[in-house]
Length: 479
Image 1 (cartoon, rainbow, N blue to C red):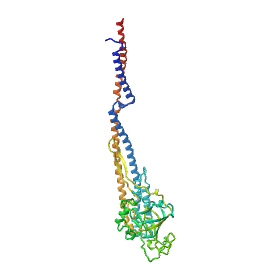
Image 2: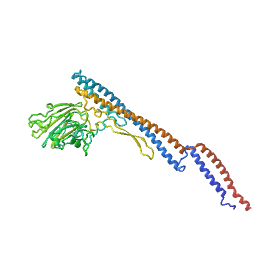
Image 3: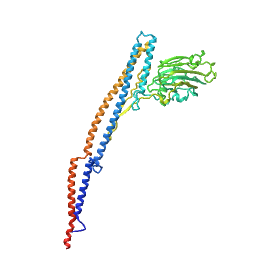
Image 4: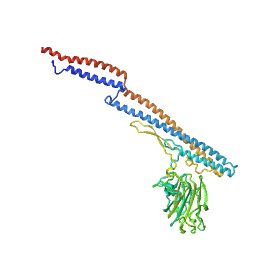
């Protein structure tokens, strides 16, 4: 039916021309962007798949960077271990020298002095070897839990705390580096109050043995009792190492003598050395004479004053005042490190080695390798007298074996990390290739499509012009 108002031929030509133009626009967009998928309408499923692939590729790049940081951390640690290894070789050489009976006592003391300096250098290397804020060679534990630092408990040298209750919980800890520290405990009414000084590993350095009343009054009769109530207290972290064991082999104890007139002054005390520290101790307060002024100026016979001085603290020491009474305590020092200046600690470091979308993140743990002299088992090693020097050789060899084990651990992990990096690189290449097949434009296909669409566009335009002329035929009927 001839009509003027509705030109179906023109409408069809317009529709086809619009489709051709839309397809041509898509082809031009793909060719100009280089991407087959420019928005989700192009291929929603493909876009989602390619997006996950892109996330994996980026994650692999970041993971590789993190693994390389882990390798750098281990290389830094191994460099520190290499220095410690050299020191241990020299220390064992000194032990062999000191074990020779031809050395005089003076010569052996000189050899021992050199060894102590080397041991201090081991600790310096262990606590200063740092990478990315980690200290892989430092002691595993350096926090003293709920036990307060002496510098915090006594704000200034010479300060005194009054009316403290004695028991078996630590009063304070003396941080490493403190110098010329004097502790005075003045027992008041009630049972006597005794100074006890421990290392974090459980070595009892100054005080009274476990058969003393002040221990028994607090339910401590055996080393197991002490371990359960102090070292491994289930309610509080009192600052001891988790594997601390009671050891009284070097206990500095001066037995009380009720008949002796004993001055509380340090110059009248006795002296003993341990681990490079010299202790001057006035002895068990039971020996305090009632006719000697107590620390507060009184002459009350119930006072039992004790004093101990440490020339320089080489490792954190924990002060306990045992008893069931009340005491005043005074602390004096020449130098007291701040509590936030305690040694750094070593902890396990988790390195991410895989982080694929939809999968659990995979990590490898770099275990801590504490290499300070205590962690290496050199806490009790001395080269003087000759018997100690001969015992030292075995312990120094064990320390060398421990360092070898640490270095082997780092070497094995470094090789494993290298393999992980190679695997990630291969994954990234293959994933990128797969993503390219989904996302990237096939230029051969799209240029052919564009040429076809351009021809169709030209043809459609020409045909539409012809269709627009069709209604003019109706005019011949009107004539």
